[in-house]
Length: 234
Image (cartoon, rainbow, N blue to C red; front, top):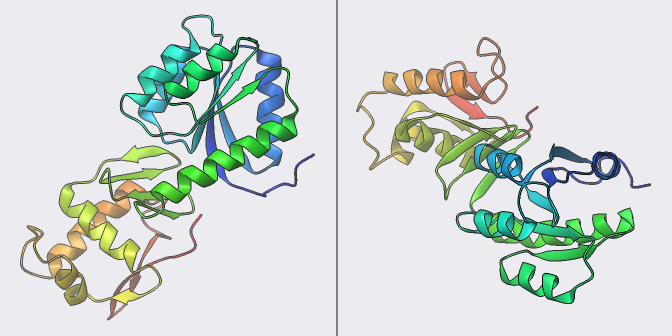
C-alpha cells in the first residue's frame, strides 16, 4: 500500500465502473490525493470546467461518449495532465489518444502501483510547467496566468483590483506590508489614491477566501503596521 500523505493534489477520475472507481479512489487517497469521481464523460467535462484539478484519470470507454472525445474537448482549452485508461488492446487507440493530447496511457488490467507511478510522473511534468504561474497556499491557489483565485478548487470571485492586491500579498507571503508598501506594489493599478481603500479591498478579499472573516487565517492584520499573508494555511 502507498504511504499516506506522500503527495497532495486533486484528481478527477472519469470512470463508469463503480468497483474500479472505488479501488482507484481508495488507493490514490492513501497516497495523499483527493479524488473526485465522475461516471460519465459529460459529468467529467462539467466538473473540469467548474473546478480546478491537478490531473485527470480518464477511462477510454464511457457510457455516453468516447474517452477520446472527452480528451479532445478538454484539450481545446485546458492543459490539465491526462492519464488514459482502457481495456482496448489496439495500439492505434494509444497513438490516437496521445495525438489528441493525453500525457500517458495505461491498459487494463493494471497494477495500482503502476497507476500511481505514472500519475506522479505526469504531475511532476505538469507542475514544472505551471509552477511559475500558480501560487499555492494550502487550499488556496492564486493563478497569475488566468488571474483567478480558487479555494478547494472552486473559483472565488474577485475584481481585477482585488486580485492584484491579493497577488501582491501572496508574492510577499510571510512579510508584513504597510498600506504604503502595498500602494507602491500596485502602481499602475486603478486603485483609489488613499490608503483606507486598501482596507476596503482587504475586507472584500477576506469575504471571498477566508473560512471565517471574523478570524482570518490567510490575510492577517498586524496592528499599526499593515497586513501579512500567511505562508502556512489550512
